[in-house]
Image 1 (tube, rainbow, N blue to C red):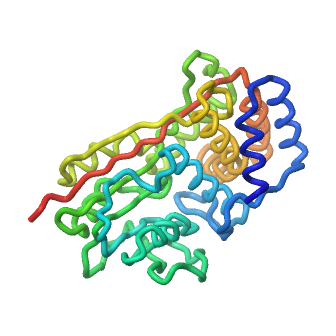
Image 2 (cartoon, rainbow, N blue to C red; image 1 turned 45 degrees about the horizontal axis):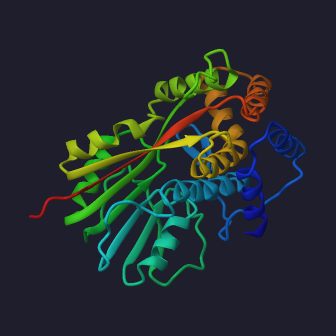
Length: 319
């Protein structure tokens, strides 16, 4: 963790072109390897709408956990989970890091994390357990949950309204459900990201190809509406800026951007290969050229790219 903290501080302090060039060189030389989180496990790479196990992608998912936590002001969630919550469900738990930390925070609650692959660690808090399950199938839980958490399931879910309905059905009256996901549309506040950039062309093609494959890669835009349609009340929605890199002057956004830069650099090929070769007909060599151009652009401090994280949470009405 010390190495990760050191790199983060270095990235956050990058306010000059010289510093940004320096980190670009470090990345290109792959001079730094970082154990980013205390839980390092297998996770998934994009393959059609599912994922295949890969250690590098595991590290990226744990970086994503930290990135989301920093973006939310150090919080694991925004919904008001009652202190006496008995049952908590983490949908698509991935590496399990959110479920583990939530289990530590709520030691009297049973925290269940599900995923399509059994990649979670065996040594976990006594109130945390994991199971293999596909959340797009019919749920068979016999007891309702006090809180259901679903985060970063874009490019995994084909029927979001149905997922919301199942969450509603399996939440106790008065319980809460929270969705945290992205709008992956890249933009910039000053026009420095243009349609001619490789990054923007990639972004447009990625979203288009995902939708052609039956996947909504920008679910954050629709979370609030889906929850209301499912019957939740008092639905609240918030949006957070995710800068790509350390270009913002604001210290908090600079830190968010540092973590976001890191996860993009770690996962660029994972986002790209299967989708672009299978659905856009590109060769592996063509995809590699695209990735190289994107890496070059996002290392440029003059390009102020960003996208958005969306959070929506609501309560099931009392019976």
